[in-house]
Image (cartoon, rainbow over all chains, first blue to last red; front, side):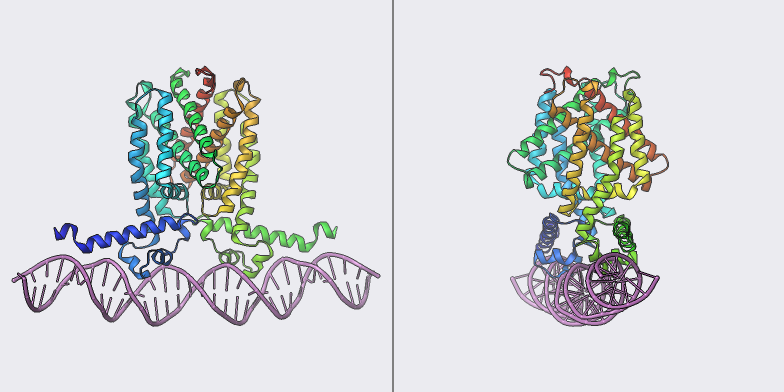
Length: 215
Length: 215
DNA sequence: TGTACATCAGTGAACGCGCGTTCACTGATGTAC
DNA sequence: TGTACATCAGTGAACGCGCGTTCACTGATGTAC
């Protein structure tokens, strides 16, 4: 078993994870493009040079953080989309799942919201790539839903993207509400998000009423 | 006239604008939280210390950039929302106006998209404040539209926020398409944005069909 | 089990560099008379 | 119009500091026999 789970390898993985955790925490108050290698190693309590045993650069660490953050989002999105029940129940459950994810992984949510349009190209592209996967996945889930009978592929992806963007926006607003808002702000934001999802649902239900059938 | 438009004052204003312009250009490849004061003055061609004649810090300059960038967006949003014509025409016109704004002020659009969730608190809050003004303004415009007869205040603001977020998202995607996408990418993104606006319009038209009349 | 050698995560000194900020200054522009 | 003084945008030297990266190293862990 030494090769598969050697002490050395386990310790290395632990340090790597400590670097990721420390970076995520330091990113609460700044962007990745200003995060320093020494800052991260200092927070972990190792020598600056040890950083290179795990990542080639801070940018590289950022890409690893994308995978960690959006990997954890994957099951949440799956659950949200595949939840059964009528429209109103689904919406309440979706908003609840998003709020729960924000509570469980606030730093991940902040990181993705911040770096999605951030100053580090490789990280932006990693996020975009993951979000495209999510969109495709949501699109497939929507396709197998009775409400979407008769919808074209392009319309399904359009709707999927609207949902994904809306989820991220809601998560980001919930995060702000938790961090800076008053006690009722969280509920206000959740209620607003539910209304917006409801409006999208209504649009979805009547999409094929349009002359030209979904344009 | 010396007091109102003295040579000294005009030169100062010119230097200030040069600092803003240089900063905006430097921000194409990084975030505000990593932009250096010396970097900006070097680009303008003045001594680092001259910076303090215009701004207290880079953060302060960032807040000034928010006003410049969103000030220029204000008339665009007014025009977009108040445009007359039926739904389909309005949507085409709105997407056209957004695309035109992105072409005219790409660096402003990039700055707002990047710093909206960025690492500098004062700048985030300045952006949020301006966007809240926009949302209120869009809400008022929606209220005086026949389609919104019978809508509650809260629903109007919910819809206004959906529109404002959608505008920003579209602007940001158009920017990426212009910068990195192939030749047809711009049209693809514009078409997608139009479909999403259409879906929202459909939802809007049938909002009061809901049991309970708009939630 | 014991020994001899290989691997490699983490160390610590050293480097050159650009940073933000201070300070006293210069000299063109503005103002008072 | 001319003179004497005030203002103030921009200068340039200097400072202490933290940065990313290099390098030869140490010593615990892994491997071969």
